[in-house]
Image 1 (tube, one colour):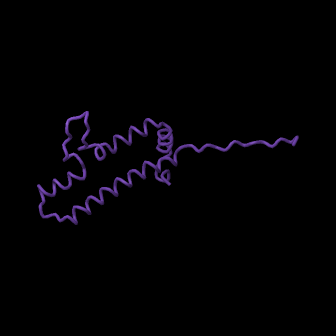
Image 2 (tube, rainbow, N blue to C red):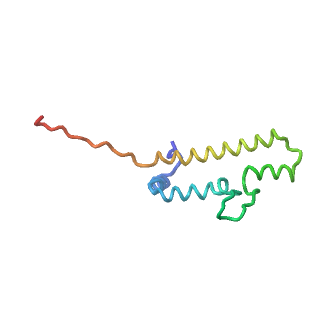
Length: 113
């Protein structure tokens, strides 16, 4: 499905990339770090800025800049962000289709049997 819109060169490079587990994990961390790691609190790091958390940031902006936004609208925006994240996760999962498939071992029959 994905390779229908990739050029031949892009397809080759994507197939090469998905075979490199460290590269794929690194890319995923880079793409999602702004969402999954911002505003987190850990004991080995100074308190993070909670406005860095994508969900809290929406609420802070609504309170500070647009106090007329309703809870309904805020929830709809948060749901849309969550859906976008879900789609990104599914996109990463779909890259698995570019991995070469293990071919079953062809067991030759023994003519002596």
